Image 1 (spheres, one colour):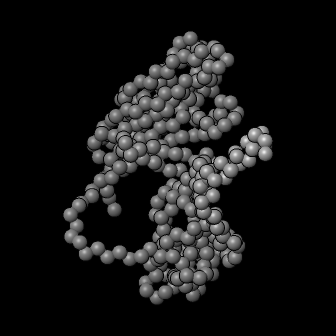
Image 2: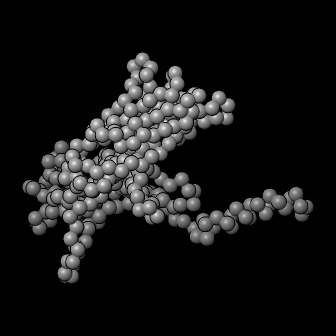
Image 3: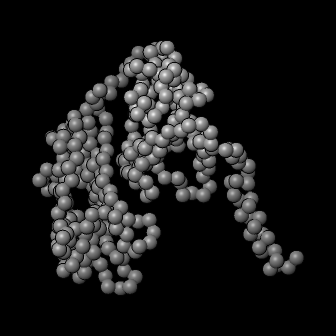
Length: 312
């Protein structure tokens, strides 16, 4: 075998034997769980505990006479986008989720009985283990995640947990997070990087935008606002002013863009500002100051993190 003939063979061996898939053969489901039975779809737009009751089942066209509690089954793979890493192995079918059912002990779903389950929305919050701060990951493909339920067989349930230890920790507050991000503008009409609201003094545009957010039972402790802002301005840089409830929190300066063919279309700047809220109704205002004629600014996203009193 000549050297030229050996090279493709060696490359093939390296690719095959260096792949994690070469160490174990993955098995796949013979068919989807949706292949048989009658299924009903639930659209979820934010994470939380959801409730299904008899009126909802009747409205969905389900015959609720003698509806066995054990037969309820819920499937879904949670929210968020699939990993882009090709070496991950996501589930190849819908996964069954455990639920809690209050049926009064008679084994049937009737009267005031209900079903509770936790579901993730399409977007996720991830934490940085170093800074211990949260940041959002918006789904590029959907504003809803989907779960499916059916009746038949024996469903998965949340097991009862009995704790006999003496409680020694009292939790009365929690961290809450909010983000705003619109994917409406793609500068190059290519790729997956999108941006939101435009700021300019062109006809029909505005240099200022206000966003109203409510945090009931907010505590008067330090919170934070993170912004990701962009601007396209020639010769002279431009600026965003960030105000909360009419109080100036800070200013974000963005440098001018160059005229070269390889220059960035716009300059981007991420900023984090601290505040202490005394009002559960927050009014966030972004004001853009153009640096030159025809300057444009954009909001990519903003995040707000606060501390709230735990209230049930």
